[in-house]
Length: 215
Ligand code: MN
Image (cartoon, rainbow, N blue to C red; front, side):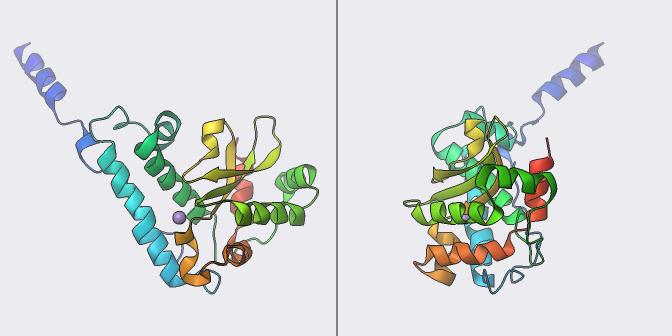
């Protein structure tokens, strides 16, 4: 009995808090840093992944220590936080989502039920891309332009400032375009529209379609 109590005591006082340790880790890119060139240069990918994205991961780990968010999954943090914790959590999620949807050998067009949904909501794939490009060019300051599925099952394009993420509005993100200057300034300087035009060459519609099909 005494042994049990001692064990229980030890268990309860054990540092179960990974909270004071590194909770989130930087995910590797699913392709080489130079794989998306010439559309996105190796230098941009190194800065974007190793400095900006990794910086958000480090900052988030630091900010959540000893807060109610310390043990939450990333999506729960995004849904329940504000201020710096939300900003860094959302930027971690947004960047992993962004890097994952790119490929050096992308499927160039959407297919199946996803293609039909695009046609229903936008008229055509070309019109969807045109609307999203326009939203990306027109977003003032830093932010993200998202292709989402809303609660009614309709696809829509949503612009968000800064770290804004459509999960906060109960929408399902399918594709995210990062329009922060750090995403394009090395390669395209002030020409954000050109960077978005180039980015289309790297979007893997197979991956985006799988997100749509995942219920
Ligand atoms: Mn970024």
